[in-house]
Structure formats: C-alpha cells, structure tokens
Length: 374
Ligand code: SF4
Image (cartoon, rainbow, N blue to C red; front, side, top):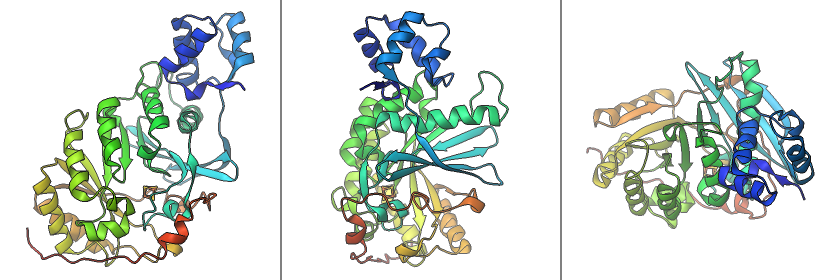
C-alpha cells in the first residue's frame, strides 16, 4: 500500500526517502512542498527530478481527508467536518482574531475519557487518528484559507494550533508527537512552541513524557476544585487525582515554553460555579505552587448532558473572585455562534465500541460545597 507522507515528521520522511535510495535533502524538499506549499500531487513538485517523482507516484501518496461539510460564521470562524472512514467524522475549527488565526484540531474519533459536560465524551470512543489524519486537518485548513484570506506569499493563515477538538491527545501520544514536530519544524509549519497548545484532561504519565519529548504549551481541563466533584465530571480523575495532576503540571513547567499552565474550567450551573468553589480553587492552586492562568468556558449545552450553563453574571463574579486572589483569569469568548454546536455535536454519533456514553449516563454528579474564603 502506498505510504501516506502526511504520516511522517522530517526524520520519518528522511528514512522513507532513504528506503527509496534518495538523499536527505530530497526529503527536506519534499517536506517543504507538502507542508509549506500545500502540494497534494507529486507532478507539481517542479524542482524534484522526474525519476524521483515517478518513484514517489508508485510508492507514496499525500492523503487528504474528505470534507463532509464546511460552515463559515459571520465572524469568520470556520468549522469543518472531516470524514475519517467507517462512519466516523471529526471536527476542526478555525478562529480568526486580530493578527492571528487559531486552529483547533481533533486527535481521536470520539473520546474514551467521557467528561460529563462534553458532547464528544457522550459519543464514546471509536479510534485514534493517525499522524496523517491529525496533520491533514492543518494541511487542509492552511492551504484552503490562504487564498480565501488573500494572504501574501509567505504569510500563514494558521498562526496557532490548539489540540482541543475531539479526543484526548495524550491518549494518542504515538501519533500526536510526530504531528507536533511537523507543526514546529521550520521546513513544515514553523510554529513556535508557545503557539502550539496540547489540552489534556490529565493523563499524568504522558504529561511527563511530553515534557521530555516535545514540550509545547499545556492546557489542563480542571473543571473542579476537589477530587469528589472532579471524579464525577472527569472520570480520569479517579486514576490520576488532583494532587498527582498538579504535581505533573509543576514538573512540566521545567521545560515548558510558557511559564504557566492554563487551567480550563467549564462553568456548569449549580455544579462547580459557586464562590466557595472559586475560593477552593484558589487554595488548591496556591498549595500546589503551579504558576497558572484560568480560562473559564461558558458551557455549551446539549440535551443528553442534563446540565445547563452558568448565567453570565455568575461567570463574571467567579472570574472576579479568582482575579481578586491574584489569578489571571479570562472568560472564553463564544465564537461562530451562528454555526455553533457544542464540540462534538457536528460529528454526530461515532462508532461507540466502548459503550461509554451508556455507562456515563448512570454515574451521578457529586456536587461539593467547600467553605468560603481563601
Ligand atoms: S472534554 Fe476532552 S477529554 Fe473530556 S470527553 Fe471531551 S474530548 Fe474527551
């Protein structure tokens, strides 16, 4: 079967070219054609010898993902739904802002973590994406957006990548790391480590491995100030409780390109949004010694969740409480409202082979109310 060249980082592509009897500089040329120029056809690669192009045509392909749908919001946000085969689909979202364009990528078809407030988590897990499938989302977005945005030669549409779409990226580590390397490679997308963020629900051993293998910015889905509540919102907490997670965050900062961890906190009405819980969060992160920023996320309701979003005034009061305690806190802006659906909703039901959606609906949420005051 023809190798998909989107599966390789530069080292992998050099090894592949070596197998064809080609020198390393040919791999670099090929890599630049694919990732910098968006070439999908070897015939376009005019500075490669015809003999090499013929060899590649027999042994390799640059395999895009099929586009099921594309929606563009009035504010410029673009959402794609990509076909990854076998009835599964994944979402990718581009968010343009002044001076930057952030692309949110998926790492798995579905997700096995099963967070209570997450539409993807309710669908269960189908399979890991390959490196090529992760990168095909970026490859497609970058090279389709450039002409649409009227960018000059050398300008990039995607300036930031966040691994925050469908899936837990650190449960697909083997495919994730080569994809990150291509994003960071100067011959690839040339993004700085500060502009690539991996978001995790807290896979502690893999946080440590990422610190050593490919440190990029880290965001951690916290969502609760204590283990009892977090156990019921993010089931992975039963395996890696808060003390272990925060210790791993602290270790991560040894090599991280930013000097803080971003804690994501989805605001759920009557569940995790009281001022007493804000105070408990302050105590938690102070005791841990982790330099951090908070990003409060207004919950995007979907029927199966049985949850609702915290009213705006209470989100702001919660943010103020954290800020008053000296924690930098932002409230995520909602973007693309006119095309919106909670993350994972566009994809519909993935092929759930884990029955996680069924199991999670039977687990009660344990709401805890700590004492107020820090
Ligand atoms: S929030 Fe992330 S880790 Fe949790 S179920 Fe959704 S995709 Fe998985």
